[in-house]
Image (cartoon, rainbow, N blue to C red; front, side):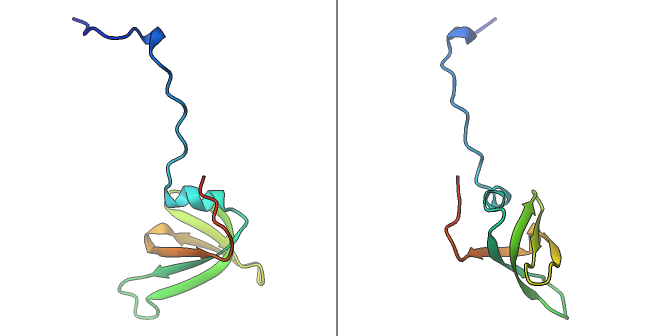
Amino acid sequence: MTPPGIPASTRPQQPPTQEESYIENILRLNKGKVATLYLTFANNREWNAKVVTGVIEAAGRDHVIVSDPKTGKRYLLLMIYLDYVTFDEEILYF
């Protein structure tokens, strides 16, 4: 038995939603900007914290790629180690 309701053809259309504000989406919006990423690595005797400054090249669900403009070195950093990110300019959010 079908419950009473509004036929599909007359239902109001929902506007497309904006991309959710996950970290990787915010990093993608700010691709090309210089950022400073702060990371911590638990149970690491050599170093348990690292700071990487560079240009955001790309970001995925579990990683971010940053390049150092001075050396050209590229870093593939895992999001699980990321504590926070700072920018010296305005952050694009949406």
